[in-house]
Length: 124
Image 1 (cartoon, rainbow, N blue to C red):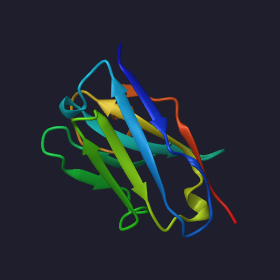
Image 2 (cartoon, one colour):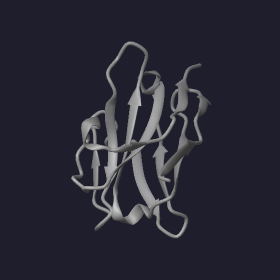
Image 3 (spheres, rainbow, N blue to C red):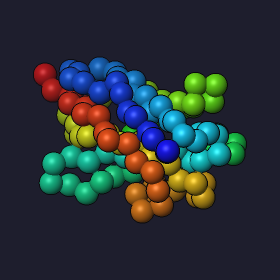
Image 4 (cartoon, helix red, strand yellow):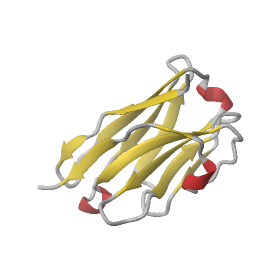
């Protein structure tokens, strides 16, 4: 059974940092592209970043370039999203997702398996 579980969300002040984790079970992460997405109330789901299973190449949305870093630990079957210099506009529920076809894009429709999400709130 394929399962993705996010953790690491919380409340942080502007300028602060959080590290999100996406732990996989039921499949091996390095055969998939793993993406991070976010959805704020009243807004569409937005692709944030993804990492390829084949060569660990990465892709970032312009809104997070230079602030967020995606990485993977194949031994732990986990993908991370390090978020620095957080802004109030980063507030959203963050989801990780897996694409078995390894397309490397940030469109939510490319991803088959989804976690339940973790809330990130950036506020003073």
